[in-house]
Amino acid sequence: MDSLSGKVAIVTGASSGIGRATAKLFAQEGASLVVAARGQAGLDSLVAEIEASGGQAVALAGDVRGEQLATDLVATAVERFGGLDIAVNNAGTLGEMAPVHELSTAGWRETIDTNLTSAYLGAKHQVPAMVARGGGSLIFTSTFVGYSVGFPGMSAYAAGKAGVIGLAKVIAAEYGAQGVRANAILPGGTDTPMGRVVISSPEMRSFVEGMHALKRLAEPEEIARSMLHLASDAGSFITGTAFLVDGGVSICRT
Image (cartoon, rainbow, N blue to C red; front, side, top):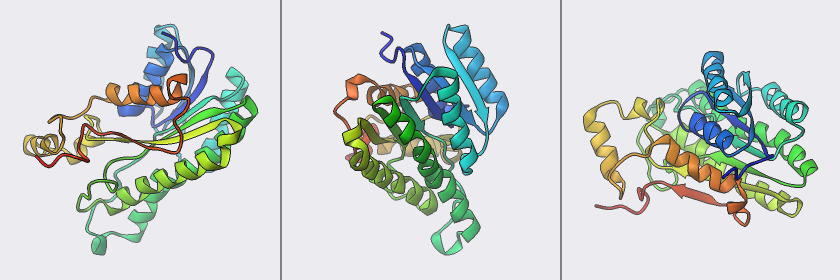
């Protein structure tokens, strides 16, 4: 369909899971990609896959907790592809998991920096590039954890990801008149390397699947298709939302 033909997108946390699936789908839909993650090897294989399919992608390895990577990603998008239209601020971590009274302050800060501060740093540099382009779509990966379900031991993760929703809402209000849309996407349980850290046994998988109305986990490609909806003109009147793609976990009591 090439619904993103001529568009330029940044995707962070792109070396695996939802980020990788999103980058590949965006490339298939015609976007030029700037992809980021901590590990160079995973990014290199992603770029090779995209290029083998006829797409364009550039990789930058780095730490999303630092402002330099955010600056470099936007600069690369502008220099290599002429501008920036879409940014998927997807990088994240489960972080230290423990009851609040046992959670270390260092663990809290590291998780908040990775999941929330990184989103702010990304947006800080992405928004002006989108305004210069006449508008764009910012997408932040949040979660149902801390929004509709509280999982014990995940306070830092939940707090950071909930903060992303507030960030998206304010950006939507601040820059909507300039054509910039901002949304947070809230996946349900998804079969990714990070998800498997929590869903670490057949019994736990069965339990988490049962929490969902659909009684299964999502595949990363299913979440990527919702990212595409928000990134493309199909989502042109959607902004400031906490966009649930959660298989019904927020409403299920069966």
